[in-house]
Image (cartoon, rainbow, N blue to C red; front, side, top):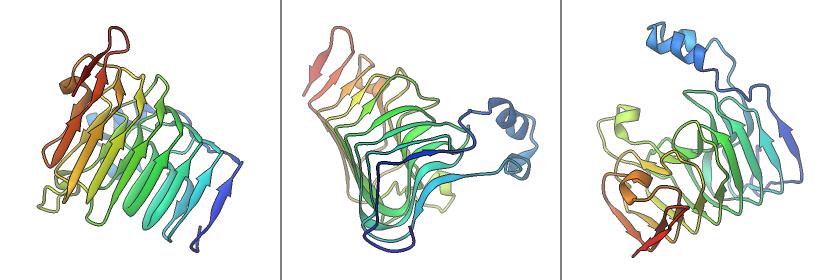
Length: 224
């Protein structure tokens, strides 16, 4: 999308790489061949945008090695009522990825992604994720925001703000990992987690409010 106020609706976008490629990741890093070897595999995005007010709805998007939806910049993006799956190339593999961008993500189904929602965590970025469902499978944790250690920029910034509420996580992997501190706040409330306790469902480092979540798919418990 090369302009503002674009809407993409009712499409099925199938990418070239729905697989996790675990062996390639192992050769690249466990065997110390490095990033140059890793990026010999082509990296692909389903939809990329660096403008404002992108709307994507009622689409099925899968099989992209970097991200199904790559929000490089802009604000007021709205991603809703999509099925986003099999974006799980190990080391990348994002359903929705943010750089310096803000979005509302709601009423989506996620399955077989490495991270269904992720971000670089740079300043001037954030997302609100609500009423989404993680169906069952994830290569790693489901919702993510990187921190300064990932970027190696001598900060501990993990985006500007985050709001994660009224989502259902049926996946046994950790649901939410915030790898630093948002500049403002991170709100996590009214979600239903697969795990039985908060410390197995959520990992973060501060500037956060966690309340009124349900833990456990069997014998669920509400912790206010």
